[in-house]
Length: 279
Image (tube, rainbow, N blue to C red; front, side, top):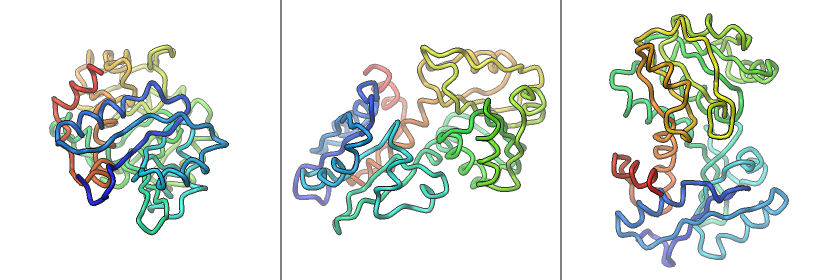
């Protein structure tokens, strides 16, 4: 039981949100650690977001996750925004503080790095450039995190170049923008390769990239986790690269919030992964 006198409640807010695996993940941790608490999905329209958020603490909620399409809009509502969330331009984790203020943070980048460190033994961020495909909110979190851990160069491509240029403007000289058709040049010499787009997700077209220049020493990861191993990862693995699926990022980004809300730092292990996959 956490410091809160009432049974703590947490929700994931989005629309749609029924597909979210976060309730299964947090529900597993609550049961595992014997904590009296609840984590539920709540479908909230954009127009109702602030009203719902301001009401939740009165109902016993101690925090929330926010997902599509609210990650950016939440920054216009939160009273306190962490430096990470401000830099990324989006938040995924909210804490309802005792002073009545809503604090917004972004744990996506930390989850991304923790996933690579856990599942790509020997990954050294400073060993070479990273090639990042996509320029949405997830890419912003990934780029901020890669720079923070010492990646010397970020090679970035997006199907709409203007979005990639905007990220270079925000993150500075370490980011070099490539045209989407320059994927071979981007990947050549890269020691980390990341798909942050939704391409390859169930129901979407595959991410099709020429991987002839991919080094077998590279670490390749895909933020998509349905399917668990995308065609992009299958092809990278066939070329000898170390591949890391996106499920671990989901698990690791959730841990800091769980600790803040429920007072227990959860372990991200094979049992956790199995529980979410079987949900």
